[in-house]
Amino acid sequence: MLSNVTGLICRECGNTVDMIAQNQCDVCFGPMDVNYNYARIKKLVTKKRIRKGPANIWRYKEFLPAQTEKYVDLAPGFTPLQRAERLGEELGIKNLLIKNDTINPTFSCKDRMVCVAMTCAIEQNFEIVACASTGNLAQSLAAYAAKSGLKSYIFVPAGSNEIRLSSTNIYDPILLGVKGDPSQLNKLCSEIMLNSNWGFINVNLRPYYAEGAKTLAYEVAEQLDWKTPDHLVIPMGSGTTMTKIHKGFQEMVDAELLRHARVTFNGVQSTGCSPIVKAFNAKSELIQPEAPSTIAKSLAVGNPADGYYALKIIRGSDGLAVSVTDKDIRAGIKLLARLEGIFAEPAGGAVVAALGKMAALRHFKATDTVVAYITGAGLKTPDIIKDIVPKPRIIEPTVDSLDAAVAAINRAKHVPGAPDKE
Image (cartoon, rainbow, N blue to C red; front, side, top):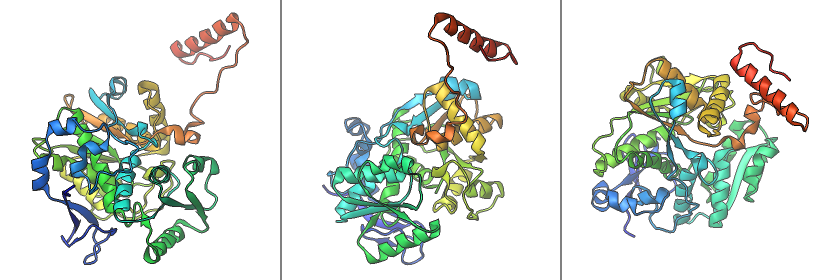
């Protein structure tokens, strides 16, 4: 098909190159983005055409960098936008919606990004794809590589939790434990890229990988009947998800699918790794790298690549950037599960905790529509919540024993301080 993509363009100096695997500008070392022919897209795209598309990210194919329709496709995306009435009532947010990305093929929003990057990797004739990760990215890459038939290499720190890695290893990638600290692992990956024709999914293929996150904007707009919400609450690691959601809304305006992109962007980090929030609070543009120490591993990016740009978006939209503690995150996970039936990973718990903070600050008006992004499922990290969930009550196999247990439960619920025992 005739492509809507014109090449890559530097976000800083505007230098352009062809569609190659390149993350950094040769001229100014700024980040490279995919550049599109928006005049052509505007002529092609209609709401009717989108509605007739598949129920996954490829219904927005005109806005994505794949130049063929031979997608590496496990059908990610078009996840529910769910009204969260019970959670909203608890937090004091009248119109709260959850974008539930826990139900993607490998249970996180990384499927959107990896699906796009893997398709582009094949177009660029890579035979080996790789990443350094122990979490969502590793699992997604392994799954999509299995689907495509490409060989995948996944680098993890030596001594990583084998049980947690099993959800990656099941797809049969080549899993390599690297001795040393994270900087040595990253250095090894850089040397491999210089000397081999490997596609590192979130490094030299990052311009294509990041574009997949735009679909989080397209879907919300469509699911709101082509309107924008008032507020978005987005977890931040590298800051890329926020910058691409912002880009996605603006593209919909450019294509005349939306009337405007006036949305308030709010970002969330863990206090154990919050360089973007600290810069926001200090009214600074300088993102100071820090060593992560948090249970929210998907947010543990000490030197966020898109931190400056995410900060600019938050400030430009009169948004907030807040951080929450690991204790807050665990409580947020439990609250979301208890009230809405969604078991989120720590990044989702952070979003729920941040919603409570923002509501307490009266950041949301009563009439505002607030969309919270829950980007991954908690089933991968059950160890995180093992100390905050109750153990089973042991009863005898008799109705009398059951009645006594129910009475104890009700007594503890309705009488503060009452002993909760049989």
